[in-house]
Image (cartoon, rainbow, N blue to C red; front, side, top):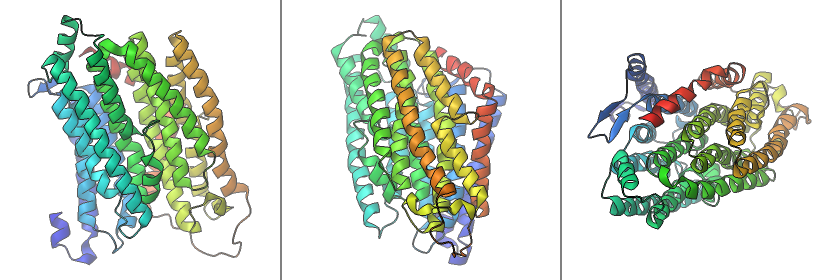
Length: 471
């Protein structure tokens, strides 16, 4: 913000360069912590921990924010937008995500969740002159405040029941006093699930997502669908497995119902969309159903290690392929000058490279081998079926049906850009694929391929999840 204040307009690109450098440099302490790791480090009376689970997720959040900055450079350089505040707010949201990854008490995790989401209220309405942007930002803000109140109400019940703030102390108190089946504990878990449900846009808490995604600047939409959503999932995983583990059979059934409804509604509505951003918004909703499915079943079976492994693995792979999908939409929307992908007929012929990247990302989201999406869906289905529980098998069947439905609308975009007739055959407009966007495309497609061809690299997360849960 200080750089933005003192630099002349022609030198504003230094603001972006500084944000990019600082974000990338923040990976260095994580690498050092990983290389010298000998066990979890606790601080602030066990309220904050550095373990392999948190290091992995912090690395994910930092990389996603770095790629979002690269997506933003050319977009935000327009005179219509303030640059210093933009990068400051995104970095503030990143800080919140990093806090959530390591938080181990009720106050710290609440501060982290709100620090991660509050800057998004402003950034989603960054296009101040756009009525859709204003509408989406207001919806996001109002429901965001409601979600915060639900989470805080759930926490207050939990604190009233136990008198403890630190997760380990809460869990110990609940077990020692036989409160695992307490109605107050179940109500607290329902309120927390509902509050975080808004953050991760699962059914029936999803109504804000399509309008907010459509109205927000595209880089912010990409960030919302990936990093902001991942923050909510991490908070949900930590709370359900560290605090509410003793009542897993109760909230597991609720979460399983939410998972099935989220997958189905998200995909069925996505089939009807012609706006690519709204399509990816409903796709993001359906993907959230896949991510929480293993967690729901793990609550019923008590095997949280496998649930965490499947959910976190899916989350990491999904983050990069979804970011790549938004990059593709950004490129083709700018080139065709249309927010209706049916107007993109034949545009891939103007840039075969962008067309190939688009096909890779959307087919990966559909779970087509050998792309990363197939392994993400494989670990989820394996986790659901290996339990032998009727709920797990039912969710796997629902997931399989929805995977087929999703393939229809993912493949439809690839069909339009490659096989449909050119809308303006005489058009000589050049295809703008700036260098920062090429870096995003190269990095995300590399991760997408590595996850599909060498899935053993991501299987290592199984060990990480075991270390996390054993702490």
